[in-house]
Length: 194
Image (cartoon, rainbow, N blue to C red; front, side, top):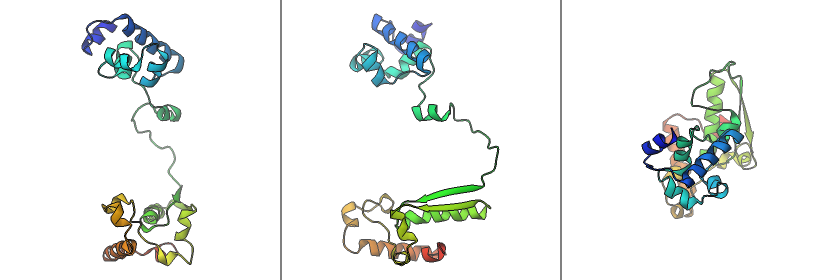
C-alpha cells in the first residue's frame, strides 16, 4: 500500500532511504504516539535533513507520515492538553468566576481588562482583576490620572516607532484617544476602576 500512496504523493519509486525513513516514522509513532518532526528525523533517522527534502519534496514529515500510514503530527501543546481535534466540547458547568491579569499601565493596556470584567459582571459572573507590577499604575492614586497611551512600538497606532518616540507624542495621542472615547460615551479610567 505504501508504494501506491507514494505515487499519489509524486514519488514513483521508494528507495532504501525512503524505507529507512518510513520504518523510523512507524517506530517513533508506536513508541511515542506521534510522528517525529523534520528536525528529529534529520538527527536520528540516519538520513540528513537535506536528503529528506530530496526524498520527500512536498515536506518530509507530512509526506513520510502519509506513506508510513500514521496520523499527521499533533503539536506538543495539543497533545499535552489532550486536544485531538477542533471539535467543540460542551461545557458541563457554567462559568462562575473569571480572573483577568492587567500587565500594562497604559491606556490601551487597561481598557481590555476593564471591558472584559464589565462584560463578565453584566452576565452575573464574578470578575477578579490582578495587576502585575507594571499594571499597578492603573490603581495607584498618584498615577491613575496620568495614564497615557504608549506610542513607541504600539502596532495599533500604525505610527512609525521613531515618530512614537518624539517628545509629547504620547500626550497628543492620549488626548486624541480620550476625545474619541468621550464621543462614544466610554467612561474614563478613574470612574471605571472605582
